[in-house]
Length: 461
Ligand SMILES: *Cc1c(COP(=O)(O)O)cnc(C)c1O
Image (cartoon, rainbow, N blue to C red; front, top):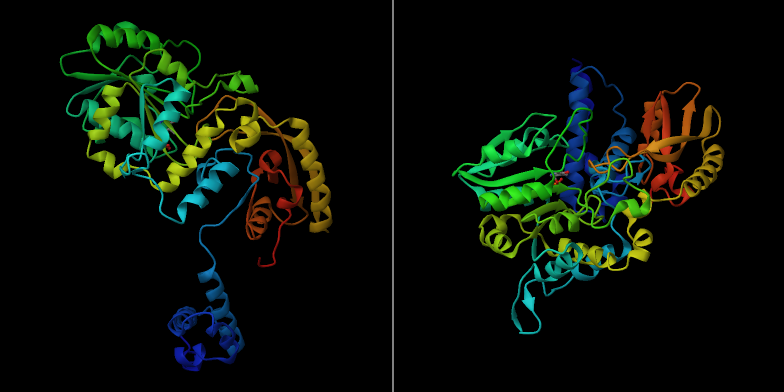
């Protein structure tokens, strides 16, 4: 270790009071600038001790403090351009909100709202009152409530209706979604005992009938969102399960997951494997259905529970409801999103999720070609840019079997690997996220409406 180098380091205070930092000193408090100087000095000290640093010029240290401040004050959560081709990308916050939903959040976030205030009576009201009527109208359910996400919806439903008792489910439906939602674990955390029946590929009505005992609280059916068992398979339809439930006087719950409110085949989607429609499950007699607000529904993160009033009342009386309730911004976004469903004609235009999923292929191609020309000009030497056909996906376990044909800009470089190109696009402001395929960097244009948005920008905005 070079002790003489350590001695060359300026003190934190001296560095913080450097001339070049005076420009930012009036923007931020002195303790904040001092903190930044301290971090830079201690990093430099560590690097000297590790033998990986010799440049201790004041200019360099001051520039490092400025860079550190710049990073510290820029928001952590920021917009990113989704050129991954995945419409409902869980890591990017799933559904993009409609203008109507986003505007309603802004309008209601800044002041008091009648979240739990009944303007007609001038007294205390119910949080669910803004959403329940709409959900019932759109699904045909008798009653409904909303919680933080669909995992919470399943948790509170099972805990309310089956705590300390058995829940029957087919082995073919013991799913894991997105790595952290595992149905067997949720069933256990809800205080229920899991009773698996049938086999992975085949479950029959007799399996359900034979499994019901005095200790059985409910039958659970789960939509196997993100996978499909093919070949020698057999399942029991919801309608049959409802019949079994009635015969044995136990409720039948369906976890629909993505839960579409409209028949997506009307939009040419789900022809390979149809997405279940919430109203059909209600019509088939499910006592409760649960689904996400931010998957195919296209709204904010939320879990919607719809079904028979007697069960919704019990769920609302569960103390867990208080722990899992949604805030006013979710209510605002979800109400505005649900309202869009009243006009089926304009839905695909106004709801981004549906707009992206049903976007005409030639429009995607046109955007890809326009963007490719701009990118060629912008990126310059060494890059090879092509417009190629590709496949996007719905994401979040929705429409898993769907082949969503799309167009992408494929970028390669004479020397740089695809992940190097990917990093350059992520360093843009706003960051641009594509995907890598066969060592080429792809910008899938399905979600890109403006060609300019995939041109990287390195000026701070
Ligand atoms: C996505 C999904 C969940 C979890 O929903 P979140 O809204 O992510 O909590 C549960 N069940 C099924 C069938 C799903 O598809």
